[in-house]
Image (spheres, rainbow, N blue to C red):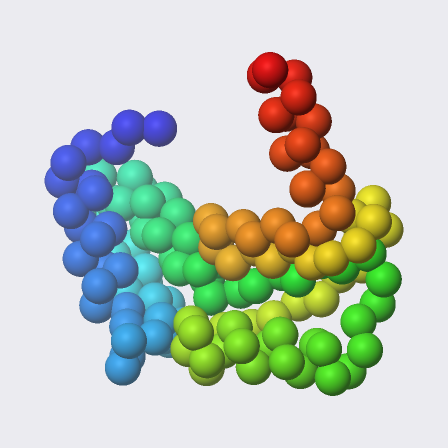
Length: 133
């Protein structure tokens, strides 16, 4: 969806003002939305929709989903969580899921990044190589 330049500028300004010490602050987001709704500048609905998109992307950038074929033992979960927090900051939330279709290994999704070390992923890549040849 294309939004007007004025609305995009407003949404980015609101988004930048919503951070405290490099982290998104929910109270500041709420205050920015309330102030925008009360003042009703031009294109404010489009700006608020774009602000919602920016906030959703920022929250996804700080949430990791770790998928494995079988439940991981506590030592492995702690090690994966520690590694992710060391690399991407202490405010990363980690969610562990069991996906039996992976056959083995791990798949980690963090924002738009995906690291696929699963057996299923390797088999899919091998299949693609054979189909191209």
